[in-house]
Length: 347
Length: 277
Ligand SMILES: Cc1cc2nc3c(=O)[nH]c(=O)nc-3n(C[C@H](O)[C@H](O)[C@H](O)COP(=O)(O)OP(=O)(O)OC[C@H]3O[C@@H](n4cnc5c(N)ncnc54)[C@H](O)[C@@H]3O)c2cc1C
Ligand code: SF4
Ligand code: SF4
Ligand code: FES
Image (tube, rainbow over all chains, first blue to last red; front, top):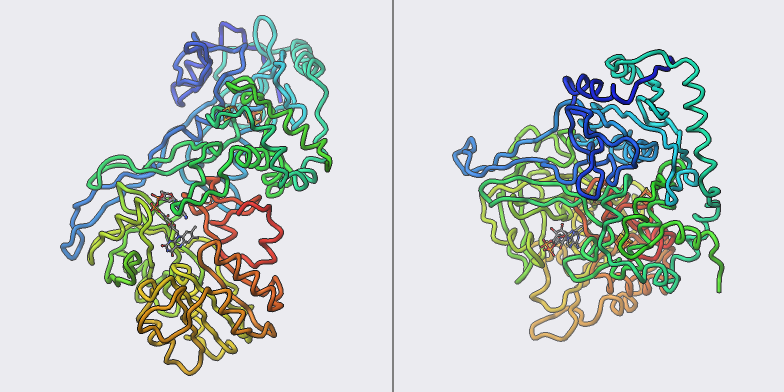
């Protein structure tokens, strides 16, 4: 497909034009964080820092209404009924300026929320109407390890448009027909030899990263160390069960369902939940199959590196973005834990 | 399910309530949408999510049999927020239902076999659906035996059924309570011990057990002592649930989701899973 060149100053008019038809979610500074917000111009958009939050919230919001209910609407036979109304989202969106790991995170979500087995109506309504514009990473961070989990700083998988940064602008390439339509809205010039230069730069970024971790034994070793609670206690000792790692993670997809309102009128919500919390699996009887944080951390690692791959053609449920590492208040580093599993030996 | 949004409940009406014990009530419900009720099918062992709007949803096994579709029956032990509120329902009240969910007992594969049911407390609920189904298809199955235990006579749910089952000639029913009680003419003793005394033959027999986790554990030990093969021991698992459709990530044991791959498992399957019960 043709490559074009977009000047940095032309990002603003481009976003303005896209925003006429779609909600454009792009990274902006808020306090110390860079978060995705609906933008109708490009003025505040941050293009050079990896966003603090992940793009999952655009297709899987932190809170969303599943239905509303009202009691008291009459039934046919005159008795008091409850009426429920489905609240499916509508409208088109663009995720602007995710990194390749964020786009990969959405692919990991798709395997669970929209596949042959099940189509989550709410997720699908957003996801199928959202296009993804990804910026290749020229300067991976020390906590990035996408190259260990199947990704790369210039990986285009899951993106509709790839933007390859240069000092004065971006070489842009559309990868899908949706991407082509969006790209047609951008003020641009032919990329010429800039294309080769920008892609080469993005391609070299991987060389600035640590060498990929060897994860070849993780699944086998996980079985071995599963019942070694001392191993898991050692690695979860510092953990506060705060859940920041799960909320910021582009691939953590667990949720809770709760009702808000009275018994007369209200709504049923779905909200992000946190598998690191005691309450996640606590049963009414008092029994809790994951009562200790060692067991919960074990499940988080197991889910991403063992269980999910088992169900989804060996793909991992971690995109190597490193958010859980930079944000953890206790400096828990998932790389160290996975490495310890890989190197686990009996006694 | 009739709609393609798995998280959206259908509305139903409570048509009958049975007080089983001090803390167990049975609810019979019908979907308000008559066409949906008429086309509803399920298999013994499948569950439903019952919801009270403004309170929440909880998981219960459908303990009526698909051979009798006048209503769906759920028996509910009062333990927490949702179950407390469910116990306050009256006939005519409205309730949300998402059903059927989960896997089921392998009724077809069990044809021609002797069936041994071992239930404790509210764990009788998932056994009831299968037992009634088999009694309604009596010729398909061999000898049917039920061992059902409760703490005391007052804790024995399904009195209506017990009357019928104890008087039937085509099944054997053994009832037991933990401690002697005046006027109790049946067995006294813990379920696993009574089971060992009964010493059923594992020959061409499938054992189906459900109850509190500790009872399941000792019952399986007893079945192993009696030489039941792992594949011939079926049980249903409980896990905290929310979505019931394999999304919310709550009910997993390793890569299995109790809400989708369960609640019915053979002991052979359970032994392969990570030990996280
Ligand atoms: C497959 C399956 C079948 C079941 N069948 C029956 C049955 O036939 N009869 C019966 O009385 N009980 C059954 N249970 C247990 C029943 O679901 C819980 O007792 C009930 O959810 C407790 O809800 P609560 O709001 O009263 O308790 P709370 O402690 O207030 O629970 C809050 C929420 O946690 C969840 N929760 C808590 N404990 C459990 C649990 N053990 N299992 C699932 N979710 C839980 C529910 O979403 C509940 O709404 C079954 C559970 C499972 C998993
Ligand atoms: S962010 Fe760190 S402390 Fe918080 S739950 Fe995750 S690992 Fe534990
Ligand atoms: S587990 Fe950590 S590194 Fe992996 S995708 Fe989630 S936040 Fe990123
Ligand atoms: S209850 Fe949500 S995954 Fe099983």
